[in-house]
Image (cartoon, rainbow, N blue to C red; front, side, top):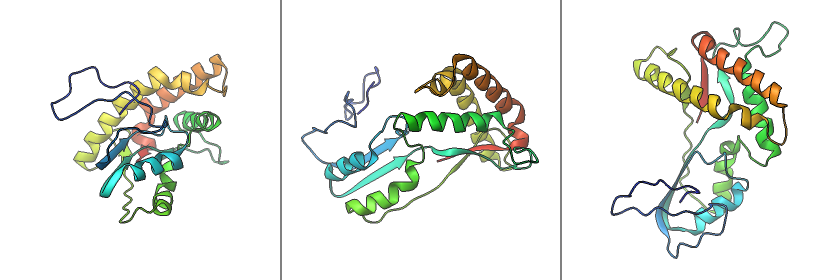
Length: 203
C-alpha cells in the first residue's frame, strides 16, 4: 500500500495497492504481518494508524515499524557547539528548523519514541524496540559501519539537495532566501565536517 506504488510489474505473489494509510482500510482480509518503513513524513495521526494495524492483523500477527527519529546527532559535541552553547553546525540547525516546520504541519518526527506505549495500550504483546545509529560519513572505525556511513551520507546529500529548501519553506518557516542559504550551509557542513563532527541519524 502506497500513495504512489511502483510502476514495475510485481512478482506473482505481490499486489501493489494505491491507497492512503490514513484512510479507512478496506482490504477485506487480515494479515499475518504488516511492515511500515519511513512513514513519519506522511502520518498525522499515529494512534489511529496503529489501531488500524491492530484491527487488520490476524491473531498472533506481527507488526514491524522502521523510521527515522529526530533530532539529528553529532558524536563530537565539542566540534558542534560554540563555547557559549550556541549550535555551530548548520546541518543540525537545518534539522531543527525542519522539525519545527513538520510539527506545524502535524507531523511528529519523534513519534517512534511513543510507539511502544501506544502499542501496549492497544493490546499488542511481546513488544521489542531496537534503536540503531546510522552514521553520516565514513567516520566509524568498524568497516561495516564505515560503509553504511558512506552510503547514508551520499543518500542524505541527495535528499537535502532535492528537498531541503521546500521542507523548510512550508507553513511557512523561512523565506525563500533563508531556505536557500540554510540548505547551502547545511550541505557544506555535512560534506566538509562529517568526519570531525561525526553526524548520525537515529532509527
